[in-house]
Structures are given as structure tokens and as C-alpha cells.
Image 1 (cartoon, helix red, strand yellow):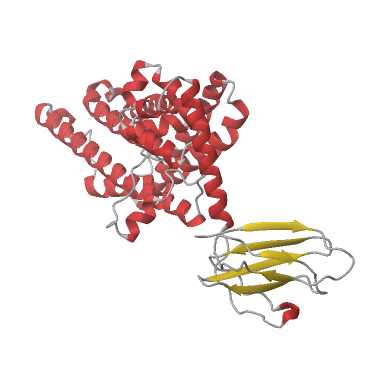
Image 2 (cartoon, helix red, strand yellow; image 1 turned 180 degrees about the horizontal axis):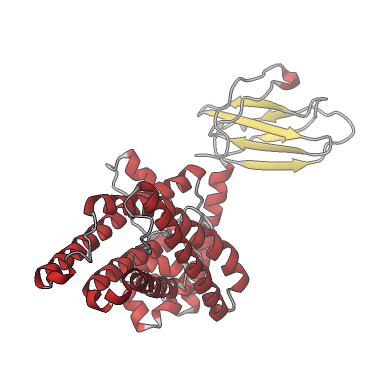
Length: 398
């Protein structure tokens, strides 16, 4: 059982000696008595052997202060000092990062329990995932209070029954507003682009326009949902999970999101978030484009069969090449743009400045997301022309 004691004292001008006297009963749980006479070199390491296991003493000092630490877990070998018994290598010591994480988790748990008490709620009344997160110290009291605020709305309370929405709403109370902004802007810009492309045939081809707009809405929704910052409430992985699964499990949902107190993400984990979301957006982009182009081509062929006069006016869209190209575009361009938008511009820049002015914050988010959608449209056209799936005279919104 580890025993750690820290002694701080000031060395006197005289040069006393330093010795340790174990208790006669050799009990591990009774710290040895200490007398001090510092030598000329204040840094060193002394190892004491008890009848149970080694007891290491490690101390470091300046001219005025000496810090002494006892531990039965091991310690640093040190540099020998004046006693001529220098050890080699390191044998353990304390993990400052681990201690800091434990301290933050204890603080989070205390804050969360206090928030429960203030709201007149018990831990047992919370959903299982939130209860487990509180007991583990993974969420602070502010997240618990936000949950209570969201719970007051019947619609949001129902929506939080779905884990993905709950994690995102707890991280950002404007999450639904951003989905509305993105989908609303997407409907407007996609419809405008379809009109620009079809002109006088727009109303004659409404079924094709409708199919394209629906696919665009699905893609826009996923572009907000997947890269959105989250409060992780996921249950732990099974012990039999592979290394790759464990790695991606530890990655954040947004590569740039702010880590809650008690958690941290390495650079590799943040890069993993980009790779994981990229693979998901590739699947979403390819599937939505595949469905959209297949439906569009089917409607075009049906119209040609009924109205032979339009046979030469409307051309079918290449299905496979367009679908894969759109998937790659979403995995790279859209993925990076929306990760930066949600994790850097909104969470790190706009939210801290305007968190007390939600209406103004929503207006700024609307402007920024509209600009991002327009930029995405330009980039898609350039990309589609570059790889040859669209002709130079075609104008298509993405």
C-alpha cells in the first residue's frame, strides 16, 4: 500500500547530517523518524529496506528548501549524491498528468452532485448514460444544469432520448438552430442553382429538382451532425475490442473541439477525428449522390418516354463517377471546412464572445454558414470540372 509524505523545511546555515531511523517493530505503516544534517550537495536519493519491501526516499532542494518524499511504489534512481550510492535508471515515481486528471474528475463529480442537489434531483433519477458519466467524473456541473434546461422543452426532452442528439445538444445548445440554418440555406441555394441550370424547364422538371433538393438536405444535415462537438456519454468498449476500435473510440467527434475538464485529446486523436468523419462523409456523400442521380435519371427517362419532344433536351447524369466524386469531395473539402467551422470559428471564437447574446450569435452563425455553403458550391463546380464529370458551361450547386 503506497505511503507518500512530503516534508518541507529550511536548511540552517550549519551543515547538519541526515539520517533515518526505522521503528523497532519494522511496521510498514509507521513512517521512520527523521533527523537532518544536509551535506554540501542537496540533491540525492536514499533507499531504505524494510522487512516488507523497499522504502525509497527521494528529495530535491535548493539552498533554502528541501522537499522530501516517501513512497513504497518506487522512485527515481537519482544521481548518487555524497553518500556514494547513486542508483541507475528510473523506477516509477508519480504521474503528474494522471494526478491532475483524477483531481479534475473529483472536482467534476462534486460540481455535478451539487447541481443535482440544487435542482432537487437524485442521481438515480438521471438517465443511465448521464448517471455513469457523473459517477466517473466525466462531466462538470454546467453540463448537468444544461441538461435540466433542455429537459424543460418537451421536444428537446424527446430528442435527447437519442444518444447522438443528446451528446450534441449538451455540448451546444444552438445545435438544432445550426441544423435549421444549414438545411434552410441548402434548400435556398440548391433551388436557386437548379433554376439557374434549367431556366424555362424548371417547372417542367420539378420532380427532378425535388429529388436533387432532398438529397442536398440529407447531405447538409450530416455535414452539421457528424463534425459537431459532443459531450461523450458513450458506454465503454468491450474488453475484446481491437486496437483500431479503441483508438477511434478515444477520438473526439470534432478535431478542434474544446475538451471538458478531466479529459484531453492528443494530436493523434484529433487527426483520427478527421479521418473517422472523413470516412463517414465519404459514405454519406456517395450514397446520397448515388440515390439522387439514380432517381434523377429514372425521372428523366420516364419523361422522355411520355414526351418525346424532350428526348434531346435533358441528358442523363453519369451515376457511378458522379457519386464517387461527390463522396471524395465531402470526405476532404466539406469535412475540413465544417470541422473548422464548428470547432474553431463557432466554439472557440464566437461562443466565448457572444454566449450571453444568443440571438446575435445565431445571426452571426447564419452569416458564416451561408458563406461556407457558397464557398462549397464554388469549390464543387471547380472540382467537378477539373475531374471531368461536368462540362465547363454547366453550373451546379453542391
